[in-house]
Length: 85
Image 1 (tube, rainbow, N blue to C red):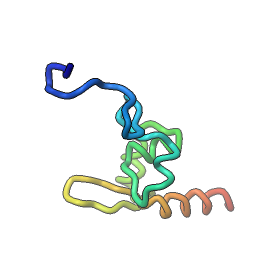
Image 2 (cartoon, rainbow, N blue to C red):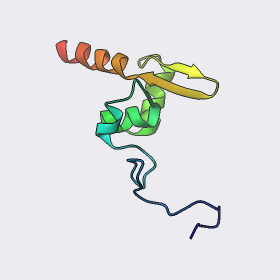
Image 3 (cartoon, one colour):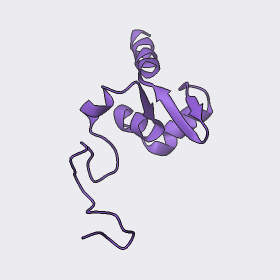
Image 4 (cartoon, rainbow, N blue to C red):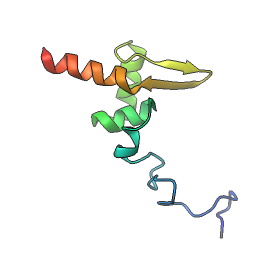
């Protein structure tokens, strides 16, 4: 039975997502672009700090209307650059 908003049961479903609303880490590795909250999950930082890094231009983004996405390869390059310093 659905909840008061007409949605089905909340929790882990067949779509590979957990009840948190974010995909599992191995699902993120397959995608070309990820959201800022997913960047935070991958980096182990809080969501607000991830948005701060985006605002400062330290994480390059692609915008589609209000949606902000980060190319996974760009994030990997930033991490590689940081590790070599």
